[in-house]
Every structure is written in structure tokens, then in C-alpha cells.
Image (cartoon, rainbow, N blue to C red; front, side):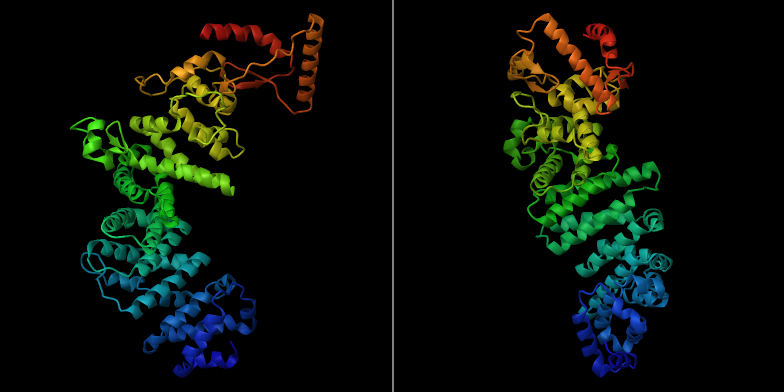
Length: 559
């Protein structure tokens, strides 16, 4: 922009403003580097000229173009940090109708009056919200000013009015309201506290989400609406990350929220589009913040649970009983497992980050720990009764195979979550865990839990009425089952066959010397299992021989 164009903007020459701004906005639509604007104070002069137009209500027809220009200028973090922009942010909050005066203009019941917005007014509000989002992301001072001017209050009241009145704001405004709310709560801890405690925002947002799901039951959901739901779920995630309410009050809210999230999983659980998958992703992230005691709300009683058996119910309500387990509709858990399978397939094909799977594994661990029916269903799907034990547990494409491979990953979060889930599904029974995963894969978990000696964990609270999981096929091969590998090991030739006693003794000494050399070089660290069931490093490899009789005695005593 040359000096003459800037002068015309400062003089508010209406005949030229539209052309100048159109040319500037088109040329700089994707601009991210503003070095050329830092010379001759161009950025600041243009900023003041644009806000001079925005402050003039007689030029309201040009406000959308002016706000487009402001949105471009707000990408320059350096200029925002070096200039005082409190007055200009106040103008944007006023145009977006989320400043203090907008909050004070509410009805007596505390909700904003429902005004029918023209297309031009909606465009001005939307563009103003975009600019504010950029400023809030770039500047802590702007975030604090938004809180001082009660922007949170205005957005929550607008959200409340959207759920209580028939007249709605355009979906574009809903989206950018949620976007701004997310940025404020994610970047400003005091905003999270105020939204949750003072404004009871979690209740409003839960009701709003429930309302959206009710609407979607009778009409097709657009990508625009799905984007709004994603933004709302992100806000709720930040608010619930560190709950400040009393445990009882928060649990009541969480029960309601979990029920709504269950309906959301049922509604979009087919994962037919990328947007639906994104909604389920954010719902799972939010479930990680819900206490385990509330996750039972993911289950609903089957409609035929009181009148007949599951087989009888199939004919009466096929949709319900297609996912009926122990007289409960477990469709939401089936969605979580389908999501996990999809994530595993994507991970193998695209080598995506392991941490992308950690939220769904966290939710599954919570579910398995908190509810007996959930644990039984997850065990049926992840750890079905063994039939073919000819392959190692980590070989294959079933959920059990994937989780067993994770047990030896260097990625600690995914490794620990997978081990925790498998162990809980095995009722924290070491012998059962060995059967499904092999001692070698589970050794890290056993060392961490202090059960390397296969002792039973005390204090576990699991039902004892589960059926015998050993199939006939497994029982026939059980004698050949190698518990270290977790599979039937094919017979091998004895390497000592044909050797004399002197040769055997020589080879044994050679093995001891090699192990001792590895220990001295720091490559391996031999250890014994101490009384706490944890590994204890050895000073010399021959200590293994000294402790062998005692270990053999202890093993016989346990069996």
C-alpha cells in the first residue's frame, strides 16, 4: 500500500476506500511475514486508519472489508506486542457484541435478547470474532482485557439463549463463539475457573450439545455443524481438565455429560466421514477427563432386558440387541473399539504418532476398571478364549496382537496403557496375563508391579464368578505351551546331545564367562527377584547359581 492510498483511508474518502481495501485484502490474503510493514511505521498507520473507519457508524457498509484488513494485520505478533491496542480491541468486542455493554443489555432473566440479524450484521460479528481470535492467540494482554470486559459472560449468555429460544444465531457465529471460548479457556487459567464456577458454563454447554444431537436426529448434519460440535467439545475438554467444583457437584454434571457423550458416540459412531471421526476423537478426549464412576452411563439397559432373554429380544428389537451384552446396550463401547481398530490401521499404514491412540486406551482402561459388564465385554472382544496358540501373541492383526506388540515399545505412554488394559482384563491375575501375552512381553509390567515371581496381587477387587476361559483346543496344547513366548514352541534338537560331560562343563563355563563380560561392559545387568517381587542387580554372575536352590524350593512351595 502506497502513501497516497494510506492518506485516502485516513481522510475517509468513501469513493476510494472499497477499492483500496479490496486490492489490499486480495494481495495479502495469505500474508504471514510483515517485515515490509515495519518500515516507516506502516503497520501502525494503517491500523489506526482502519479503526478510524470502524469507529464511524456512517461507514458501516465498509466495515466487513475493514475487518478483513484487520484480520490480516492481527497475524503480525511483533506489531501487536509493540503497540498499545486496548482501544482497538474494545472496538472489536463492541462490533462482536461481546463487550461489557452487550452483557449489561441482557433481559431480566439474564439471557441476551434474541435479535434477528441481517446478513450484513452477521458478517460484521463473524469478522470481528475472527480478529479477536487472532488477538487472543497472539497476546496475553488481549486475553486479560477480554476477561475484564466480560466477554466470557456474553458468550455464555449467547450460548444459553441459543438453547432456550427458537431464534438462533447463524451457525458461523456459533462456530467462532466456540473458537474464541476455546482459545480463552485453553490459554488463560482464570477463564477456565470463571467459566466453570461463576458462569456454570459446563451445564450450558452440555445442554447445548444435547440440543444439537436432538436436532441431528431429525435432519442430516452438515460439516459446518460438525465443526461447531468439535469446537464445543474442545472447550469442554479444557474446562474439565482441572475441575474446581466440589466432587459431588462435579459428579452430577459428569453423569449428565457422559450420557450426552454416549448419544454422540451412537449418532456418529459409524465414522463414515473425516468430520464424524473428528467428533468422536474429541468426544474420547473429553471422556478421559470424566471420572471412572460416571462411565457406567455409557451403557443403557436394553429395551427387552426385563421381558425376555437376549435371543428373544433380537426379534423384537434388532437394532438394540445387535450390541446387547449382559442385558446392556454396549454400542458405545463397540464404537470405542472400532475407533481403536481404525487408529491401529492408520498407524501401521501412515506411521502416525503412537500418542494418538493413548486417549482411547485411557478411556478403555477406565471403563474396564469401573464396571463389571464393561470389563466382561471388553475382555470378550480383546481377549477372547484362546484356540490357536501356534503363533506368538504379538503376531497377527487382532486387538490382542496389537496390544501385545505395544508392550515392548519404547513409547512409554502407549506401552503402559496397553499393559494396564490387558492386566485389568485379566483381573490382574499374573497367570492369566502370561497365558494371553507371554511372560517375555509382560515382564516390564510384572517388574513394575513387583510380581516377577508370579505371586498373586493382594487387594484386587474383581468378581470370582467368571467362566473357565480355557478352550478344548488350548487344553490339548497346554503341555507344549511355552509361557515365556506365549505360544506352543516347536520341538527343537537338544544342543547338548552327543556331548560328553567334560564338553558340557566346558560350554557352561564359556557361557558364564561371556555373561560376565557382558555385565562388565554394561550391556546386560543380571538380576535376581527379591522378596518384593522386583529385580535386584547382581555383583557377579555366579550368584545366580547360589540362589538357584532357594528359588526352586520357593517355586515348589507355591505350586
